[in-house]
Image (tube, rainbow over all chains, first blue to last red; front, side, top):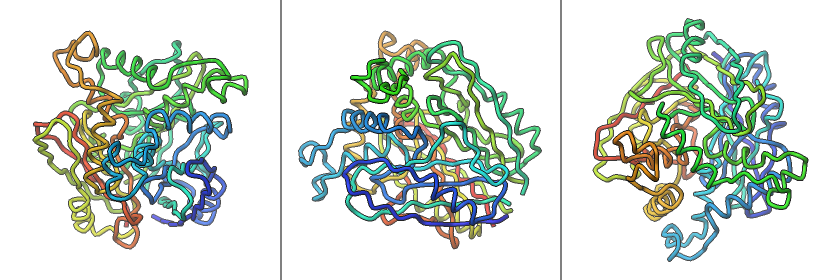
Length: 140
Length: 140
Length: 140
């Protein structure tokens, strides 16, 4: 069994945004030389997500509006107890739960075994700081 | 390390529905002859989910009502920007995020290592078309 | 390829609560002697979650309030059809979908390859009964 580990660095200038990372993940897979196996890609921070969906700007706009409805930003420590710690990002922890922490992707014939529209995204919910994404590949 | 890949084909006649696929996944596991390892099962389309929950019709009704509240269907391109592409399925992309893309299941002694009520479902949110589910198994 | 399987037993006295399980998962990893690979940790019950987020009590309070808004408890079989089975826990099945069933964690150099704040939690949504969590590790 082979394994390969890579860390991507993310610097998202907005509070909330969605960034395609399929090319970086594919580059890591190529370096790993793994032909058959499993690839894990996860946010290493708890106010960010890695997820698979459509590479379409209108949809990303819709994600933002929808997540703000489901888990609105509110800096008040009366509204979110987490913000009593001095943070103001409780909503980002909730948004990340909706969108998920990680994806696991099959590697078949040396490629990400994807359907026609699958793309990997980094979802940032508390940006303007450096964060990391992990790529781990195991197989042969 | 052994690996095994299978693609299931789904044809759901309704817009939204939940279909049990545990038997097909178990059949793939049997064909793989893998005794110890990990099984990945994921929707290959971005308006569908694979998830684990209860095989109970009333609950599936509740899932449908609840998802329609959280992420209502609305064909208008004013409501969802994604629908400015000519699609009308923005809600299906959101519903899929709530229910998830994939499950990862432990294989122990040649079986899906499940609790008493765990069953695997395909969740369709934009049906009436052919879609695929991937099963990837790695182990020994 | 090595594999290791362990089952944790959970007994949560409240209806809904969040319990840190990182120490038990790390102990399982140590016993496995696996240095490079993948770790799966999942709830074996369909009204519970395993997820990764912040070890902060205020945030756990916020999770509880938020999940109750998204998927309120309601014992009535008029409100949730699942409760026509004699159960009253339909809401717990929905809450579990928001928080997820499982996490997959990279193992690098014999350790959980975590960012600075990542901790593993068991999320209980229908407590006061014995439940199990599975830890499966594969690698070398």
